[in-house]
Structure formats: C-alpha cells, structure tokens
Amino acid sequence: MPVATAIAHPNIALCKYWGKRDLALNLPSVGSLSLTLAPFSTTTTVEWGAERDELVLNGQPGTAEEARKVFAVCDLVDSWRPRVRVTTQNDFPTAAGLASSSSAFAALVLAACAAAGEKRTLEQLSVMARRGSGSAARSIFGGWAEWALGERSDGMDSHAFEIAPVDHWDVRMLVVIFDAGPKGVSSRAGMLRTQETSPYYSAWVASAPRDLAEGRRAVKERDLNALGRVMERSALRMHASMMAADPPVLYWKSGSVWAQECVRGLRDQGVPCAWTMDAGPNVKVLVNAADAQTVADRLRCVADEVHILEPGGPARLVP
Ligand code: 2P0
Image (cartoon, rainbow, N blue to C red; front, side, top):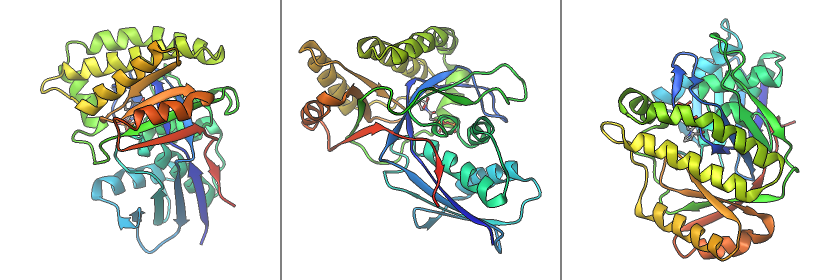
C-alpha cells in the first residue's frame, strides 16, 4: 500500500488574513504575509488505500468536521481516490491560536500527493492546502511567505510564494501562552460573522494592501521597527473589525493586554520588538535573535509559558 509521511511547520501572519471572497474555494479578501516557525511541527502519514477513510489526530479519532475537511482535501488530489488512512500528530497545543491548521493541511497535501504518486508544483500544493485552511497555503513554504490575493475566479493564482528564505534574517518569534484551551469561536465562523455584520469590515479590507506592501518591504530590508509598526497595525485593525461584529468576536483576555504592555515597555527601553495576535488570546512577539532570551524572561512574568521559535523550513517529505 503506498504510504508517505510529511512534516510542516506552522506559520504566524505578520500581515493578517481575515475574510473570504469565495467560501467554496476558500479565497481570501486580502493578501497576507507570514513567517514559518520551527521547531513546532505537524507530522502526517497518509496510507493511500485503506479499508475505510480514517483520521487519527494526536492519537484520537478526528471529529466528523475534521474528517470532512481532511478527506475533502484528499479528494482534490484524486477525485477517484481509494479510501485513505490519515494519521497526524502535532507537537504543540492544537486550537490554542497557534495556527495548527496551517501546518496540518500543508503536511497533509504533501503526504497525500506523494502517497498517490501525484507530482505537483509548490504553487499547486499551496492552492490545495488553501482549500483545507487558508493559512496552510503559506506553510508549504519556509521562511517569509506571502499568500497572494489572486484575481482568477478559479483561485489558481491565490497561492503563497517565498519572499525571503529561512536564513534571510536572524529573528525569533516568542509564543506567549496564558490560555492553552480551545478557542470559543473558530476562525472560519469568526471571519464569516465579521464580514456579514461588522461595519468596519470594508475598512479592514481597504486598508490591508498598504500594510502588505509595507510589510513586504520591511521584511526585505530587515527593518524590525518598520515591520513591527505594520504587524501591530494589521493585528489591531483585524481585531477591531471583528470586535465590531454582531455579536462581537472578541478573542482578547486580560493577559493579551498585559503582554502587549510588556512589549511596549521593552520597546520604550530600546529593545526592538512587536506583538501580534490571531484567533485566540495568546500573544506572539517578534524580536531580534540576540534579544530573545531577555524578552522571553520579561514576558514570563505575565504568562504561563513562553516558547522561543525560529524561522522554519518548508513542508517536506520524511524519507
Ligand atoms: C492568519 N488567521 O492570517 C489569520 C489571522 C487567524 C487570524 O488564518 O477558514 O484556519 O481555515 O481559511 O487559516 C486562521 O484561520 O482559516 C488564520 P480558514 P484559518 O493567520
């Protein structure tokens, strides 16, 4: 039976994706920019030919909704596919706002295509990963990746690409955890509610292209102060749009604000650093590698756990 195993790292967006212009194809309303992060990873094995479709996620049977999404992506690899067994393991907390779906679907498409003997370009893999989860389009690539908005109605030009390689810039991303539980509102539900009910959603979409252009330039120039301004602005504008939804989508907790204040305090003392937040209360902080330990020690005063992550490589097959 053909079997393949792939490993992928999650990514954290520096310029955010929030909102869909096409639900069925999972096409975004805005372009986004991210950093792929090691050593956190998802390892996924696909057996192409099994008695029945089966998903095992972190040692437990996947839920019906998880299985539906996983097998729908397998259908994209081959619509006449045999039944498959998918075994996937995250080495970091699932659903804690750490973008576990980004590494999960990137590893899945790579393993599934290899097990099926289907050759695909990185761009085609990124398109397939996007159908599973938008942020996964970016985790096909290592280092600094941009997910293009695209123009085509079939979505084939809405894929990620590398804007700078993994060794471009010696930074660290600190993941500041004070709440490791599953989130109350899924990203997908939160996005849909925002675009259907928030009066600020159109302003968010209109503001995103400028942030993306500035973010791309700051990454290329390795300008942490400029990138930090864009990161915080993009995160705040995204969260402002969702807070104004009806009912509101509010992921923030008191710890989120404490961590942000800690980052501002460090910056006032001359340590370049900037925060971002996703669909959960935990905070991520971008710093120069040389400052990572100092900043992590300071953040440990307001958090249960602080993980120091580094730029990670692309999704790859495990021999
Ligand atoms: C991002 N997030 O750019 C944004 C910022 C969360 C906040 O992508 O519906 O799991 O599967 O495409 O990718 C998380 O949402 O959403 C996400 P779907 P996804 O990283």
